[in-house]
Image 1 (spheres, helix red, strand yellow):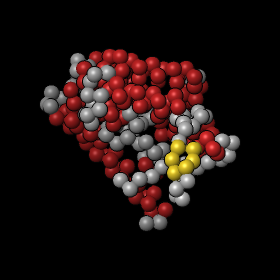
Image 2: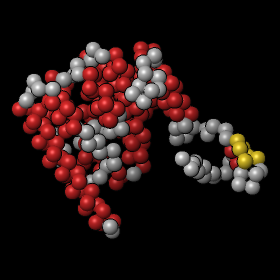
Image 3: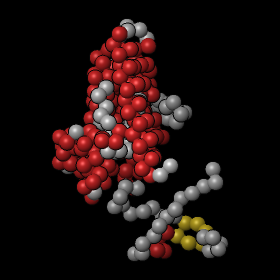
Image 4: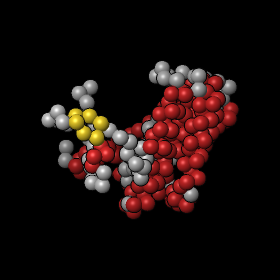
Length: 241
């Protein structure tokens, strides 16, 4: 495909998914007491637009807000919500934060709350990084504002970055304190995941001093990253795996 054809195809996929989400919402509303209702609602909001494609290309998402309202009202105690918590942690929408906070507050399942706690921290951190990008790129800021709401985007840009970082760290530390011994669906303990997330925030964020790296170059010569202090360095991580 050409670039234009590829974008057209992406737009069709998103619009098809939005239409399908409407049908899933209808199904859940027609059969609210059936176990299929929560499954249908989760699928209705499963499409997480982490890439800010222009709204004129992919269309509006008219289902998301109502679907999350019904999930919070009727299904917040479902043990099935852990997967959705993980899914939305990579998104940007305001509804995701509200949903994750509701799960933390109202879910009776400790394992689900554990996932929600981690997901909230990851969501807030990911959102902060995107806002940082928007501050440097007016075109990206417009796309995010068009997709997720101008007032929401403007509110995020007005927030104090330092205070947001403190909140993110507090969310992760709270997850470790309350759910550290819980095992995540991938087998990793919550405490281990929190340690990894906090290390990245505190040591690998833009503007932080790069951690030391030592090894051999392609000629077998030993080197350290600090040998190049003061010079522009491109570090390319790759693997055969």
